[in-house]
Image (cartoon, rainbow, N blue to C red):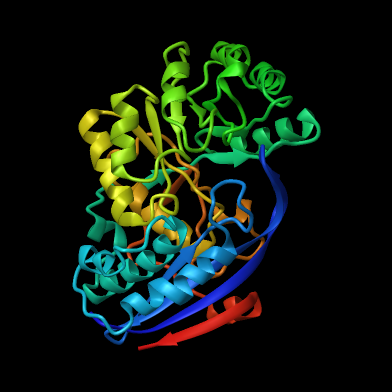
Length: 368
C-alpha cells in the first residue's frame, strides 16, 4: 500500500459531565483525527492525547507537530504491506506514542478494509463481545458519586473505577463500599502518591478492590515493586508501561500483578497486542484502558479488547456516557455491560464527516 494523502483535524467534543482526576478537570476534549488515503482506500485513526501535560508528556499541540512535521512526511509516498513495515518507516521517531498511535490506527483501518476484514479479525481476536466498566471522576460530594454508581450498575456495567487523590481516597471508598458492598470496584490514582503515603494505600486493602491503578510516579517501576510487596490488593500499572519491554521488566521485579493496556500510551495496536501476548503467556490479567476516545478510537479499543487475554472489564464504556453526540455511525453502546464487536471491514464504524467538520478547530492536508 502507498499512502497518498493524510488529513489531520483537531476536533472538539463537549463532555456530558466534567471529569476530575488527581491532576486535571475537563469539560471538553480536543482529539486529533487522522485520515489516510492509501491505495485508493480511506482509513481513520484517532490521537487521543490530553491537551495538557498532566497525564503524560504529550499534548494535542505536540502530537500535531509530530504528525504534521515528522510522521506524515516519513510515510507519505512510501510502500508498505504490513504494519511492521509501516512502523519501520518512522522507527527513528522516539517516544511520542500518542501521535504514533493515531497514524498507526488509521493504517490498520485501511489495511483491514483492503482485506475486507474486521480489524479485530486482523488482530487475531476471537471474542464476540468485550466486557465494559465505567470510570468515574472525583466529585465535590460523595452523594453525587454514589448516585452515578447506582445508575451505571442499573445499566448493567460490569465494574466501577473510581479516581482517587490525597484527601479523596479512603473515606470515599469506604462510603462506596458501605452503599455497594458487593460491586466489582477498583481505584485509579494517576500517580498521585509516594511511598510516604504507604499507610493510606495499605488502608485500601480493607475494601476488596480488584486493583489499585498507578498509585506512584508515572515513570516508576521500582517503588511500585516495594509497594506491591506489602499490599494484598494487586497493583495495576498504566503510565509506567510504554512497551512490551516495560511490561516484562515490571513483571520481572514484581511491580504489579495487572497491566492496563492502553493503545494510545503504547504507541498503537501493534505494541498493545505485544503486551497482551506477553501477559497471556505469563497468565497476567489485563484490561483495556481508555482516554475518553471518540468513536474512532473507541472502536479500535473494542477490536483489541476482543483478544483472549482481556479477562477484566475495561474502560470501554458506551460513548453516550461521555458525549451527547459522537462522530461515528453506528454509535458505540454497551448493552448489559458488554459491547459487541463490529462485523464490518476495518474499524467497523463509519465517521460522520459532516459532524466532524462542524466540530473541527484546525485542519491540514499532507499530499505525497
